[in-house]
Image 1 (cartoon, rainbow, N blue to C red):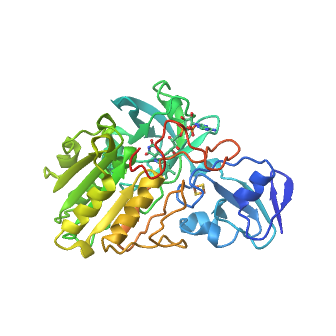
Image 2 (tube, protein in one colour):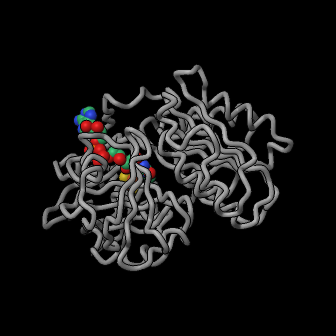
Length: 368
Ligand SMILES: Cc1cc2nc3c(=O)[nH]c(=O)nc-3n(C[C@H](O)[C@H](O)[C@H](O)COP(=O)(O)OP(=O)(O)OC[C@H]3O[C@@H](n4cnc5c(N)ncnc54)[C@H](O)[C@@H]3O)c2cc1C
Ligand code: FES
């Protein structure tokens, strides 16, 4: 089988992904999660069939236009592929920035046309020079219409996107990819407990989901748990943020923080919250954050008796996602997972396997 990209053809090995064959030949494609979650590696088949696996989870219109995810696609026939067309990205302007903590920045982007999304989803942001990274949307669609789309970024001073956004001028142009991810509120069971646990900036989409649930009339308990390595990394504070109540005037049932340096373990906290619920089996759990803590949280919920939905097409619990990779959302079932904010692989250049910046906590440390 031959894969043709940029006018050159490469022999595909059996079972090899499009991302891997190109990397093997020194062709750097942007990628982040390498697990079908972030859509950073979106490509388009111009001729031939990229295979069903590579199109799993894509919107029908994208599938029909030949789009696929290079990290998942393992074509069984010759295929000619090209980068995603620019018309699937929405140009946007950097409106404003606000420092939320020493290393966390909120940024607001005004898309030039509406970007329909659900609270809790994520998009890719692309700089003018093609550097692309996935980020979760931190506000609700109605707020994004009014104020711009909000993102909470952990700043890596040398980070190609976060470091750059920390100093980019107001009015800078970027582009926004198609919203994706199934980590969002599903109406239909308004009394079920919601347990949302996130580390680092992983709390941002979870807070949006909680507020969306409350705005949608959810009446069951809503429990948010935020974990970080140090208290000053609990960037939304120790009390429920005012945002929490803005949608409905009602606070969440519980807002709990865990700082590892204080000896508080988010995994134990979440397992305890889950077990203490009157009806744990009716609970819908949402997890979001670094890959290490995500895997431990999944395992803890599983051990506490939770039914953890297997990601579509992927291995189920309790092992979770491969280290350094996010789990994909279990859209139905009791667990929806968010992202890994561990920059395991840097996109926009030659993808590198499993890189860990020194600034990040070690895998399994429970917070970022
Ligand atoms: C689905 C998804 C959603 C996400 N949502 C968010 C979000 O809402 N908020 C958020 O903050 N993050 C989020 N992330 C993570 C985000 O996409 C980026 O990975 C992160 O912002 C770092 O990107 P960067 O370009 O700033 O840094 P990069 O340039 O990718 O580098 C990151 C860090 O690694 C260091 N580094 C670079 N190269 C090396 C190397 N070879 N060896 C060691 N260290 C190195 C850099 O110095 C820097 O400190 C999400 C990730 C996924 C997969
Ligand atoms: S979806 Fe392929 S790298 Fe994330």
